[in-house]
Length: 432
Ligand code: GDP
Image 1: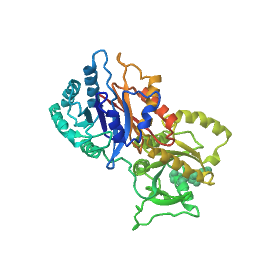
Image 2 (image 1 turned 135 degrees about the vertical axis):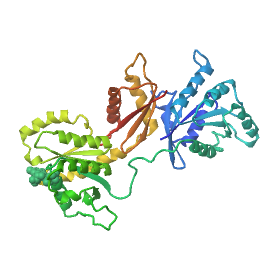
Image 3 (image 1 turned 45 degrees about the vertical axis):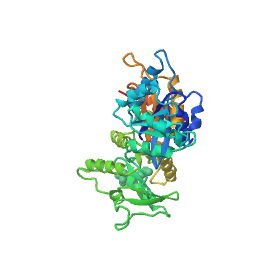
Image 4 (image 1 turned 90 degrees about the vertical axis):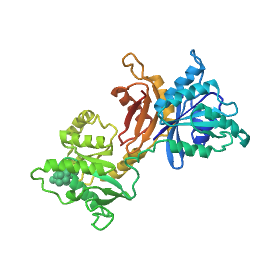
């Protein structure tokens, strides 16, 4: 989602305006202890559009003086955000500091909006017009305190922000889509037959209905699911020549058109290369994942012990996957699949509000800062969960974060917010 940075001198009413824009939805978060006050990000919505609002905080004059501090802040805002909102106090007019900021912002290739705050009544409109001298285009009068014209300002903000691309796995109507995948002979057709064979099931969509004829509708646990691309599964295709290539292609297509994958593994045998290839496909496609250990009826005590160690090593890429032990043959625990699918999809759909995310992140980073690279300490400025399906975090930083540290963030993020059964992506946007 696009990022709007709000900049302005102390006392121009910036916080009031930020709260006004947020509709006070998240304003309380500001008081969470440990949150770095100089840069806080929030989720904002207007006219059905969602964006991240970054409050660059009050400018405290440092050793180099207020103007330099302000210019640095504006620079930072420009580099991290998609658009910048400069707030000035119309009752005071443009100060030298405002002019210094405007100079920095004028160089920006990104859209800059100018809000003339404290315009509580029409008599102040003349003061607003005086702000044209800042060279940032039309000054937009607003009264953060009374809400006057804040709707117009928000309209202008939305118009200035780049439109967000449609979310990859955006909600589609109808049953949730499941891919049933795994190497040949692991028991996919057996499982599908067992699931579809339950008394209360709806099976096999027929051509002419709205459902793709290659899919199967299956009712599990009171919910209808769409098992995608199952045409070849129900009536077993002969695994003759070229079958392996074909099978892997089919697996990829099924995963791509699904939201969640049930990866079937043979519990009686060690994890194979082929199993890991399928898992990698699921992770790379960013799909939610349930690992089903099939043929559990063949697993004895010895095998169970061997498995523990094997899986620790084999499943390092997906420690977060939902796991169930089943037997397609006997029907054992097959009923547990539906709750696991639901958990995985819930995580896949989950979004952590930006305020909450940054409250948590600033504490984490204060305790464990990113490792120094090339003599420089990269700083994490703020983060937003830019997307769901799969959940995707974007960290805005002043330097590159190594893979190990990104994994650390992911691990802690999961410890704090859950996300069982879903991959989580951590992207880094370095300001240049
Ligand atoms: P697919 O190639 O993945 O579709 O595998 P199939 O469903 O055709 O199963 C391959 C073989 O494994 C068949 O002989 C099945 O009877 C057997 N099989 C499937 N599930 C189980 C299970 O849970 N336990 C046992 N013991 N055998 C199973």
